[in-house]
Amino acid sequence: MPNCIIEYSKNLEKDIDPHTLVKYVYQGALNSELFNTDDIRVRAIPFDYSLIGGDSKDFIHVCLKIFFGRDDEQCKRLSHLVLSELSQMNLANIVLTVEVVEVRKDFFSSEIK
Image 1 (cartoon, rainbow, N blue to C red):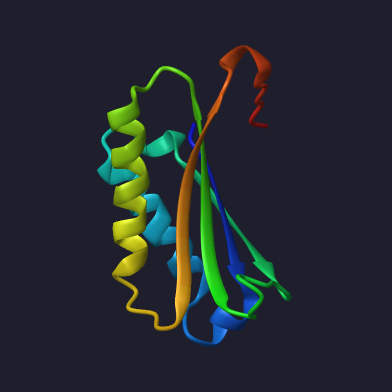
Image 2 (spheres, rainbow, N blue to C red; image 1 turned 30 degrees about the horizontal axis):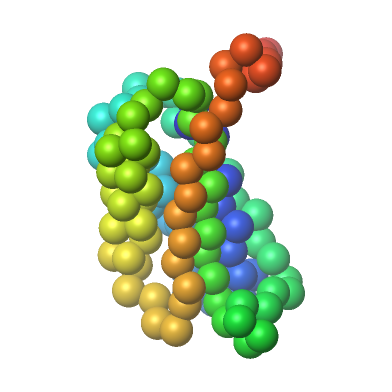
């Protein structure tokens, strides 16, 4: 854990490879020093259509789902570190957002086969 879910404008694929986007988010989560390298899971979902403030703007939104137990400062730092990594892509005219969502461990199930 964390599960990092990237939602982004499909239109961005002309400027950045989705695999590269995944690497930036992974690096931001790793930079937080809250997680082991093998525990960070990142996936990306493109969206064909969106409206932001009534306009069709490109966006990248990252939802970082983590287990309860981190304090507010750790959550803020995680969010800022991922945003900082995304900002390094130097994309123009884009909305970048990152949120941290805490998940109860006793409600989470996982199995790797």
